[in-house]
Length: 375
Image (cartoon, rainbow, N blue to C red):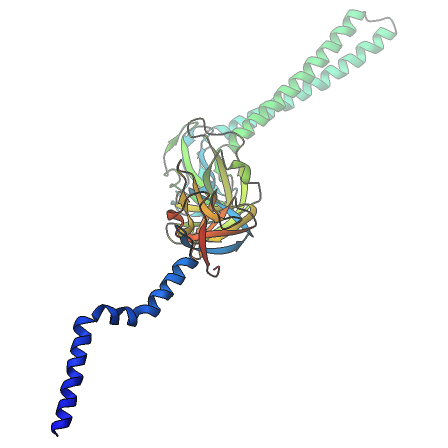
């Protein structure tokens, strides 16, 4: 037991000696392998080389679309007014009612107009009788002139009387047409099928030429109206497909039916109209809408928003990896945003785009590229 105690004391003394007096040598021995490994990795990486994350992107054909803000508009709206005077003798039709083309809206009291028509027709009969008499006289004058019993002056007078009689017949017939037209104007009718935007004139109202009988609007089809900037007008054509979302959440679609050839002098924008079917009249006149109009397609890249950066002069673009892993700035054109990323054009069909770390490198700098899969 005494020998074992001496051996234990000796071992403890040696351990304490090594721990206190040879501490540096022990630490160097323990860490020697790690230091050598770190030095080898440091020698493998070039100095001042920035690590970036990039993806290889292939251009795809994508349909472009122009986003506009506009509003709905009735395809037709007319203020139906009286063309003659008279008192309304028909019951009013209330606003909101649907009327057919040609349906009676306001009926005016004819007054003495039927008598005027009868008088005009009597004048026609009288003028026709004069024309017959003049024809008989000219025949008689011509026969007498052939036998030498009537002068040429008499024959000429007979012919002039016949021409005057014919003119009288024509004037009388014109008077009949005017009187009948005046009777026709007493019935004010809808010019097309649509909805009444106002009540028709009340019973007993005294109408004068130009006084409003009713306002009729046509909502089937309905129009979507927007204004396109002059820089984008060339991308739209007649018949292009279009869609819209109304403030109510209702989504509709149609085609471009009108494209203005003259810009607004103040805004330098061009009016565009889209025709939308509306058989149930759920789309109203004057609703705000977000409009998308399909334009000519182009090749573009779908990239994450993190890839975008700005040049020193504020140009929007991305940094790409060129030959020899050299970073380069490339300007792009924004097309549209999607849940999967943003569509950009202006890049080569095949390109390597830096998506992380592009803000830490400049043009012409060599980078250490780590790739990730494209989405």
